[in-house]
Image 1 (spheres, rainbow, N blue to C red):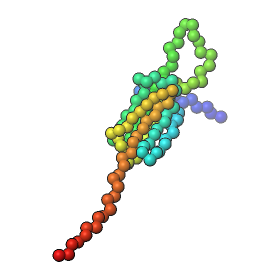
Image 2 (cartoon, one colour):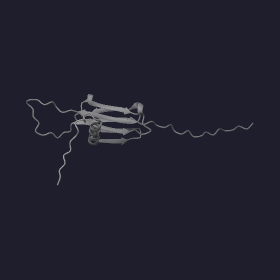
Image 3 (tube, rainbow, N blue to C red):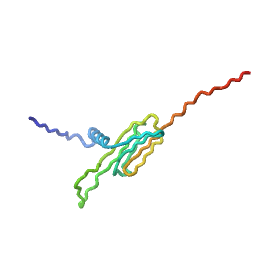
Image 4 (cartoon, rainbow, N blue to C red):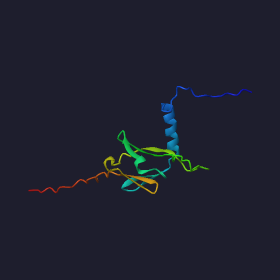
Length: 140
């Protein structure tokens, strides 16, 4: 029976495209989101516990991709504090969504409270179809 040991080439740096893809894939898989549709809007509700306000980003990419991301960093170790167990999630949060055709991209808003980010995308309401109006013909 043969055993194989796989090693990563030393040329692959931490910022390589492969590693970035893996980090982003993990972040996307671990970021939980609820999406609600109301008659007037779409709401993206993203759990981001412990993420500081300045570490949250909401971007509109390529005119129809909503990207939500954030980072929760590890606490800096001190001489007096030693972790015995770490279970709470740290690292990158990220999700991307393709917006619907009726999304009003100019009025997107976001609010962060108690570890939950809510991004609201209002809908553009199509004007009601104007029914043809019958014009009475006067006979003279």
